[in-house]
Picture 1 (tube, helix red, strand yellow):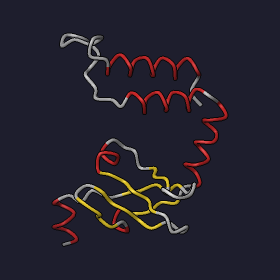
Picture 2: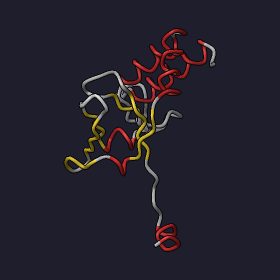
Picture 3: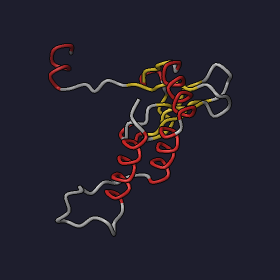
Picture 4: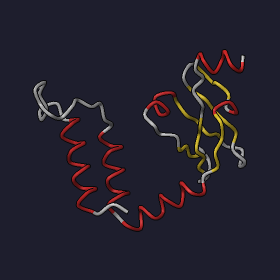
Length: 127
């Protein structure tokens, strides 16, 4: 598990990289488009030992569901029925940003939504 000082340092570096007044075109910090609320949530989770353990348990216990098993509800939005009768919902922006954990809108069940990128080479081989 990373040391608290390492987590805090990475958090502050990410904040600086995403802050428009703290970076410049000549800066060594590359510009980054970051959801600050999500960054703060990640820092809060990772910097607290019990929160980190709970998060790690969610990751270990999350079922993996292929995006192919989801239905495209609208352009860039996919849904999947939960065992409770509720719905998992994921959007393209979340997947592009690496956020694959999705909670049911009705219960506490969490799944990891995965997909495999198909390349032209893969299509030609498996076509």
